[in-house]
Length: 70
Image 1 (cartoon, rainbow, N blue to C red):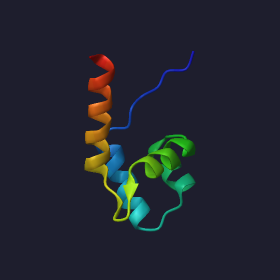
Image 2: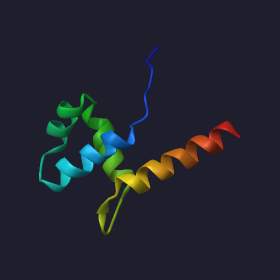
Image 3: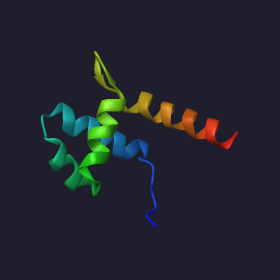
């Protein structure tokens, strides 16, 4: 059985930095030791017209986790 680990705020900040610097998703995934699908999904789910915001993504993740616990 696979185990899943949520992205941390530090990982999300690294994703934001490297993405803004023009690194490709597979490169970012390799640098932080995550699957590239995780990075693609993170950017798709948490980007808007202003780009990717790691703090907003972290807040959304916390809210989802709280809803699942309740």
